[in-house]
Amino acid sequence: MFSKIMLKTMGQFTLLGIRSLLAFAVLLLFFGKQLKNVTKKELTGGLLLGIAYFTVMFFELNGLKYTESSTMSLLENSAVVFVPVFMSVFTRSLPEKKTVIKVLLALAGVILLRFKGGTLSFGRGEFFGIAAAMLYALAIILTKRLSSKADPLLCGVFQAGTMGVLGIIFALFFETPALPRGGAQWGAIIYLAVICSSFGFTFQPLAQRGTTAERAGTFCALSPVSASILGAVFLREMMTVPNIIGAALVLCSILI
Image 1 (spheres, rainbow, N blue to C red):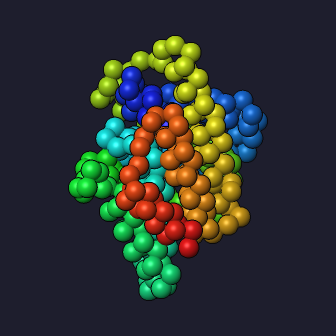
Image 2 (cartoon, rainbow, N blue to C red):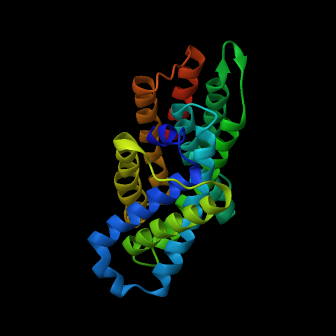
């Protein structure tokens, strides 16, 4: 929700760059002393994760320009469906029946989510959302593999730094970078930096070290529920009956 608000006055790369660099600064404040123990594995892991999640965020922020925050969250967090599918491909094994059911439910839900005024609508926002979901699934799998081979906390710190540097570089080439204006904008970007990036992105490798990629993906179910409620309350995003049924199907596919 905060990302969608900020995109009205700020370029996507500028937003991502400032947000991630602020997060990196916060992490250095708390965990800077641990950097003396950094190894090549942490640097490489942080770089790869930073590139992976920067790509995910690129598609997410582009999608938010063309569709509601609640819809974007539902689409992106259907990554939980793609995680077991990709794992089956990587392990060269057939997906379980449960996986097939999840994919079919998610597909039906996505179609119903795009019914607007009795007609089916599928545009750039939905395309970006599904692309973000597939990339997010790959990022979750990559996070699991890297966090088991290196210090996950240090990987997360360098991940934030990588995303920040990439954001600023792309902003210099494709946008006119500008700092947030006013207390409301600074409040929004600080929230994104501290809560979403410093805590969310950085501690994900630490959390995934103790669980499977598939299990980590199931927690994506919490995000679309929150986004739907916040979008309805603060952004006045309305959902029709088919949209609500579609959202329920996507959530069912995530929770199975």
